[in-house]
Image (tube, rainbow, N blue to C red; front, side):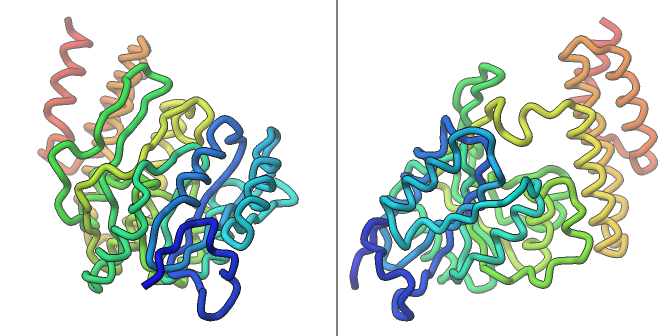
Length: 316
């Protein structure tokens, strides 16, 4: 069986070389990081063809130029989608997904990268062996380039199979570490395009359609940096986005998990309270703490450890 490596895929458009995997890459003002991201995908070593579909969302830096250069370096492998105007993250994700031809889709944002040349091969073998799984993720490293937190392993003690309930509590996925079955969540709900973000919603939809597995090998790096979509957002914006997603999926599941969704929203408000206090904003911290207790199901503590830390800060 032949071993494929990115540069050899000049026959990608031929029927016998239809891609087994599509790497879905999102790029917007990722000039400092993008070449490393693309190269980490292009140099994957596999026994099957793959493609790298890049949704470039009308960047204002050299992101588009970098993609053009690497598309020439890897003809037939790098498939650019250049936008004529800025679509926004959700519309860019939806359209880029529609252009992915592979049986499986692996996500890699333009400011993250892979550190194992066997990532795609390992995940395809896992998904082939587990047909009841809709998605799997590898372990990953998180590099905090903003808060000075250094590097950490996302799951130092591993991660059990995930279900809908896990996504209510938090977002347990790192986007650059996942691979999913293509088209398994289609058709997308009509309201999906109106959501403010896609990571958590995609997790919910895949958990609804199958199991979510874990490969305990560190194969991807997620960067927390000031140029990313999520990291620089204000606490209030992050909270409002997450709560709106949780409310939408509470309705989507016809309130089957309503108590858990209320508790999940209360946990996130508790998180916002603690983050506000860490920034010295006592008034906002108190407000989010009160909201958390008003949101929770009766007699249920959203997060006892976090609540204890907040009370110590407030009443020290």
